[in-house]
Amino acid sequence: ELDKIESTVKPDCVFSIFGPTYWNPRTKHIVGFAQGYYLYGELPYFNSLGFYKKLKLLLLKNYHTFLLRHHSNEFVVETSDVQTRLSKLLDIDKEKIHVVTNTSSSYFKNFKSTTSISSEINPFRLLTIASPYPHKNLLILKDVVDILKNEARSYEFTITVPDEFFFKEFSGYEKFIKNVGVISNSECPKLYDKCDAMILPTLVECFSASYPEAMIMKKPILTSNYSFSQSICGDAAIYFDPLNANDIAEKILSLSSDRELYGDKVKLGIERLNHFDTPYSRCKKYIDLCNDIVRI
Image (cartoon, rainbow, N blue to C red; front, side, top):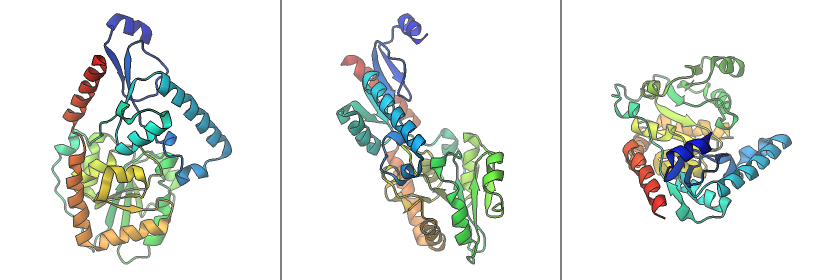
């Protein structure tokens, strides 16, 4: 079917938002890539996978690497870290891999905040907007709660998972971990507005929109101390070992008790937004890439 469409349209190039693609167009092909599982194999998360999951991942990685090499001319990724790693994976020049960052949606730009950070007599609220995939590492929050619940100040986490998952995995933690269910992007700004910080204990990513979303909403970021998050957040985040609940709790305590640190991270986050493309600049870069590859 795609061959028929290509024959009818006769495009100068094809742009696939995310690959690899199983279809190989006859014309020049730009492919987006955001599969962190194939690039960050050294992370501890992969050691936790069973034999068959590791084998399946290895087979998929080899097959998809073949498709990327043979069905693509150039690539688009969202960070310089991914650019470097994809270059090594495919053994190609970095000049064939172009960085166009992700960003927050227009819902965030148009939202007007009406709150400030909570006083020390109120709960310190932390938000995680993520689906309950294993690599999102949401269950570590229960261990963090077990540590923080004895503190003088209370801490409250808000997550966005299906109700059935929440009831199954977070039973007994409802006092400290609140679930608002699966939400749309348009609902996200209000959640950020009601929280004091964004926390993302993810174990592997290429990019997460939660980072620029927190920055534009003037919320400090607590996240995993890995190269993918560092390449996105720079010095605008507080980093922890996502597999160490004590370290996570310690960083939360540090942020919630230090107004100067809190303000510094918010300020650095606002400055960091200059590193991200806008929706307009992203679109322009995509069009420019298409024009450039046609001229080659």
